[in-house]
Structure formats: C-alpha cells, structure tokens
Amino acid sequence: MIDDRKTIWSWSMYDWANSAFATTIMAGFFPLFFKAYWANQNNLEESTFYLGLANSIAGIIVAALAPFLGAIADRGTAKKKFLLTFAFLGVVMTGGLWFVAQGFWQMAVFVYVLATVGFSGGNIFYDSLLPGVATKKKVDFASSLGFALGYIGGGLLFLVNVVMYLQPGLFGIPDGATAIRLSFLSVALWWAVFSIPVMIWVEEPRVYESVGIGQAVSLGLKELAHTFREIRHLKVVGLFLLAYWLYMDGVDTIIRMAVDYGISLGFPSSSLITALLLVQFVAFPATLIYNWISTKTGIKAAILIAIVCYGLITVLGFLMTMVWQFYALAVAVGLFQGGIQALSRSLYTRIIPPEKSAEFFGFYNMLGKFAVVIGPVLMGSVALLTGNIRYGILSILILFLLGGFFLSRVDIAEGETMAKAYLARGAEGR
Image (cartoon, rainbow, N blue to C red; front, side, top):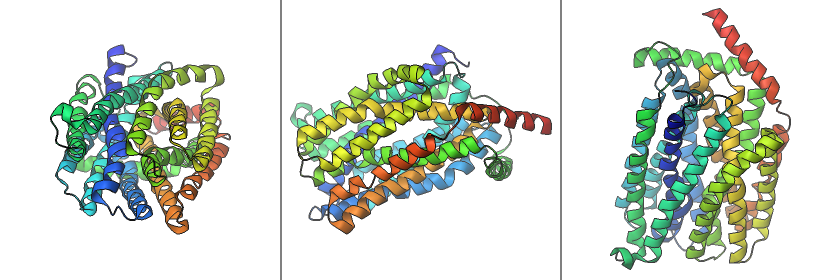
C-alpha cells in the first residue's frame, strides 16, 4: 500500500541489509585486505590501479545490463524477482570471499566483481520500487529513511567487524586476517536475513498484465529502444542524468577508494577503519537532518550545497598530511554523503513517469555505474602515471565542478510537467 508506514519501513530495510556490503566490504575491509593479503605489498600504486579496475569492471557490467533489465522488469512486473536474483548473487559471492587464499588477487577481484554486480544490480530494482512505495508527499522522507537506516545498519555490523579485527581474541579468533575473512561471511548472512521484509511486505505495482519471460525480453527491448528516443524529448531527465553521472562519480570514488588512499599515505589501518565508522554514525542523523534542510532550501539547492562541500573535501584531501585530518574529513563526508544520495534519488523520482520507473531507474543506475567506471580508474591511472596518489585524489575535483554546473541548469517543475505529458501520450496510444 502506497504511503503505508509498514511498507515504507519494509522497503527501507533493504538499505539496512545491503549497506553492510558497502561498508564492511566495499569501503572497509576489501581494499584493506586486498593490499595487505591478496595483492603485491611492494607496489602500492599498482594495487590502487587494480582495485580501481575491479570497481570499474563491476560498473561496466551493471551499466551494460541496467537499462535492459529495467525495461524487462517494467513490462513483466518483475522488479522484486530481479531484486531477489541480484541480492542472491551478492550474498553468495560475498560469502565466497572467505575461500580466496592469500596472494590470489585475481580470484579476489573476480569474486568481488560478481558480489558488486549483485549489490549494484539489486539497487536498480530496489530504487525502482520507490514510486510504488511513496507518493510525492512522502518520497523524500522514504528515500532519506532508506539511506539513514543503511548507514546505521551497515555501521552497526561494521562496528562488530572492526572489534573482531582489532581484538580477535575476544571472539576466540586466532588473528586479524581470519577476523576479516569471518566478516565477509557475517555480511552475507546480514544481507540475506534483512532482505526478507522487502520481499514479503512490499507490493510491486502491477502496471502491465503479467507476461512470460521470453515475451517480456522481446517487449522490454522494444520499450528500451522507445525510451532511448523519448529521453531526447524529456530533456530535463537527460540533463539531470548527465549531472548525476558526473557528481556521483566523485562521491562513489571517494567512498570506494578512501581507505586505499589513506594506506598509500601511510596512515595506520586502525585509524582508517575508525574514520569509516565515523562516516557511518555521522551519516545516520545527518541524512535525516539534510532531508529537513532540503524542505527549506529546495531539493536542488540542497544537492548543489553538498556538491560544493564535496569539492572542498577533495581539495583538503589532497593537502592532508595527518591522521586527525582524515578523521575530520570523514566527519565532513558523513554530513553530506547520505543527503546527496537520498535527495538525488527522490529528485529523479519526481521527474520520471511512474509507470516506467524500473526502465528509467535502469538509466539512472546505468549512468551511476558508468560513473564508477571513470572515477576509480581516473584516480588510479593518475596515481600510477605521476607516482603520487595525491594527484589521483585531486583529479576527482573536475567531476564535482562539471556535475554542479549541469545540475544548476535542471528545471524540476519543467521535468514534472514533461513526465505528466509523457504519461498522457502513452495513455492516448493504448
């Protein structure tokens, strides 16, 4: 039931479930373990490049699949089925990291890429359920609640995992490396268990009559080709997607590469993990507060403020020399990370036709994942070419500058009008 409290909370709990992967695996222990356990410890710039390449490969796969899968899910009323499929892939591959032996960085990359495909692919269909969960009146709250629960849920498990890593003896674990490997299993279990509410209590709106998967593929691909043509007319959507592609590239790169950057600067791993925990627990209240701020400033202005702040964070990261500065930047990231993600998702929901939510969120996630293709490789390549990781982080600034420029030109009211006109044309054609 749309705008129902139980439905909104059940939908939001999937953020609680899969954010454990984003925190413990993607941002925390995988880059740490990759450098110290799987990759060549004598060449930090090379391992940065390979880690960036792994994230980019996963981004390419999801980006290539996203619009096709979205079109098929809309036509076949199969958003939850696809969500379950990708979540299952992510859970199995995350647990599979336990089995990757020391020094086998190629296998670690392969399993991590598949787990990331599961994580990112599932988010396409999780996001696309949002228009059926909340109306315009509650969509900003629902989107922000999801990210807020994601931060606190992912942060709580990450806290347990960090204690396991720093004090393995308390848990009867022989060493820190085993603790990290056990953390991979804990994330898989957490993800699986807390995905249950969205599967049971969130009803998927039935926009079309159900069709078989073969027919859904054929019709879905035709719908996709049609949407490619239509998106040229929905110019506000296209402009927003360009802006989102650029600035979210910078955000995701900072999320995924921060620990790697700190290691390359010589900061102790315990300090880096503590900084990540700061991000999680600052971001939980900050996401909800930032949603309230957006009601005063307007949603676009709130996103622009976050982009400016991320640009400043990037410059300060380039100048950073001491561990306490890493902590300070972690707090700054936490203040804006959830807000920019949640408000971007809810702004996009406002300007797309609800009947085409999975298909249009396919584009949204496609560009988001193509952004991840560029950012980590840009950072890793600049670091490898210059021999200085600082120039790698500084290169991300251009993405925030361009993203902010294009977002400033997005007219939300015009986008909402175009979305309604799109639906009216579709109704006349049926």
